[in-house]
Image (cartoon, rainbow, N blue to C red; front, side, top):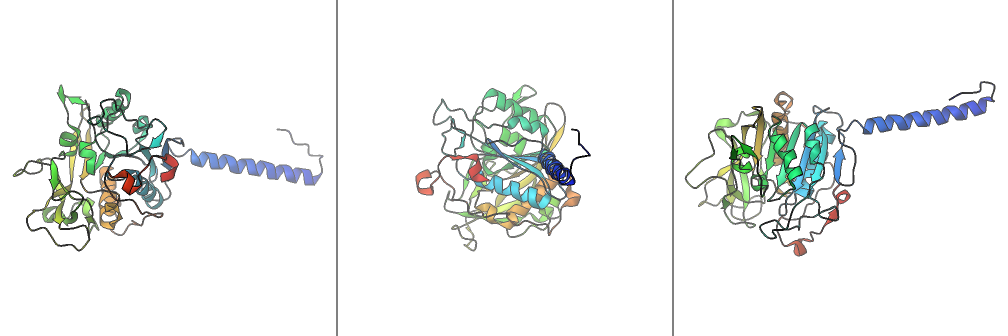
Length: 353
């Protein structure tokens, strides 16, 4: 661009303002591009602000039909980006109209069903995957992104139904088919330990492991979801799992309801390692609590966010007083499959921002 220096001063000043405005726009664009995933109507992106996680990227996947992960995963993403500095991307299971649709059937109910999670290719660019899926079946190409992630050596957090997160999962190691819940996360759902949709859970820190970094500053864990049994009666967690929190079933769904004396506590949170076909080892954290209403508990939010730091080998940055405040209004619906009563309907992705 040529500037005529003989033009009147007022013209040159106006030109300066134009150039300044353009420069400001360029700066804004460059700042937005810092996030490793482009904005899209098919997923949500949250650029990281100041915090220990600056430069790290987390992908959170919301793909269940019961526990309202479409509410909890954006809430966690906002908390992680605003207060802790992580870039976050939330991916969803979408229907044919590109709507977030927890009412979609699963393949056990309709053999023609195949789910769709756009954006899974960005797992190659992330540092951590947080998975909250339930009995979904993906196209082969999308499953391949999950399989490659399992070979990447990058860490994994599985929440609640993630331990039965897939149907037709066909990852193999040493020519043997791997069960994602059993082998990767450390235990698959076997039964409800108590009354489904009637009892709640009080988290109890496992005494011998109370010094583990993931438990730093964690207390008063409680949620309305019931306890899962992930191993056979009379059994225990696999030896490669380190239990962190046991879940005591309560009689009822209020914080101060009494303990069910007939049901012993079972593990609800633990850590372990997973090694894929490449020989690279991933840190894994699994928690079987985690309905959207469970995450109203600051104790549970701190447990999961501490696990983020631990999974990323950033445990020295865990602060027992770090900010766990929910960023915006958070009033998730109850869990369950009575979609009409709960007013659960397909929504565009932007509804959950």
